[in-house]
Image 1: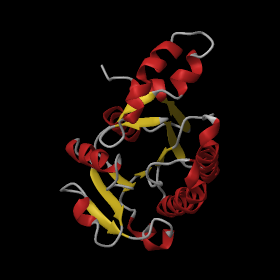
Image 2: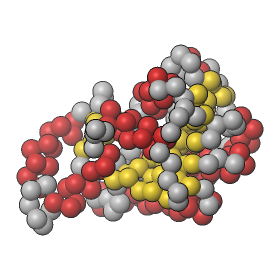
Image 3: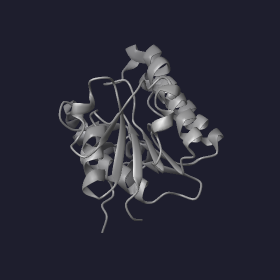
Length: 218
C-alpha cells in the first residue's frame, strides 16, 4: 500500500523510536503520543501529540488524520514482580487507546502483544496481553496482533546466552513448536514486522507469531 498516516503510542521507547524512524523513511506521516517535555526524543519529522496514555480524552481528538493506530505502550523490562503494573499501565493504556481509536474511526489497530501461551513465570503478563487482544477484538476494528517473546537489542542482550538451547529445542519434535513460539527475535525483525503490518492491513483480525516476525521480505 502507499504511504498513510500512522498514530503511535510508545513512540519514544525501545521499539517505538526505530519504528517511527522507519515509517517516516518509507514516506508515512507519523503522529506520536508523548509525555509533556518528551517530544524532543522523537525522530525528526514526527508530530508530537502531548497527552496521557492512560486517558483517551487527552489525545483522542488528535489521532486524526491517521488511519492506522500502533499500540506499543508497556512496562519496560517486564518481569513477574511487575504484575500489578501490567494492569495499571499496559492494560489501562490499551483501553484508552482503543477508545481513542474507535472515536477517530481508525481503520486498522496494531497491537504489540506477547507469545501465547507463555511460560508460567510470565503468566500474569501473558494474561494481560490476551485480555488486551480481546478488548481490541470486541471493538470491531480490523486488527493485527504481533506476538513476540523476547526482543533482542541494545540493553536487551542477556537471552543470547540461551541461543544454543533454542538451537537444540527447535530441532527436537517434543519441544519444536514451543521453542519456535517463544523464540527470540531482533529489534530490527520486530520493527520490520510492525512496518509490514502497517502497510498490509488485514480484512479482519490477523495474528503474527515469532516465525513470521522473523521472516525476511524477498
